[in-house]
Image (spheres, one colour):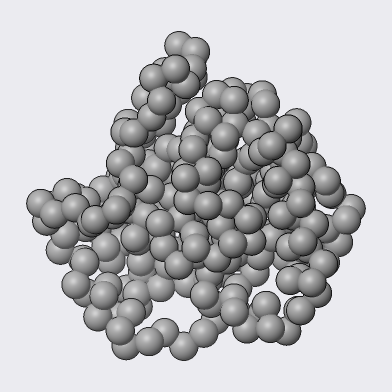
Length: 267
């Protein structure tokens, strides 16, 4: 479907620690550090340590029986959910958390969201984009929550399926490249009905499109890849300044993206 560059060349030096690809560093709020400290203990004991569940969360196991898929697909999902390749790596982070792959795809999906890696809230909830980034992304796509989280319609396949953790300063660590090397081709080979691919951030763009210019340049050249592929910046709140500096994104890219999403989902 897409060229697959050798990701052995994609190491942590390609992603500046503490930033998502395409983002600018913003001063972190004291509240963020307080939240980090608050969740460290529960993360170290696993996502269920608190014995509490957040109201309204969509369960990881929820699915449509008739959309279970082939034995190959189900074996792949099971293997991926049980992956512990990065256990030692995560144990050495400030969060000292355990792997928790967020697996979100089913047969028949037409929209592929190729993102970066789960964040802290997603790690705790087990649901992709269950944070402010997800709210913004759903607005960009023109999708409600029910449709967005229907795995038989939308496949969310990040470059790393687990939360990479925080460093000693409370900054996001980059997604481990080994995850994409081991799993990505296997997952994408099972998603044969994809008609629209949304690439979020530089790592996903490099994988699917080959190495090239920076995120801004690639997003600006969106017409070169439409209508089947749309490169996007990360919908993080940290990119709010980028959105203000680049009004063409909201004026040109988003209307075309929403129209294409609607076409793909309704056809």
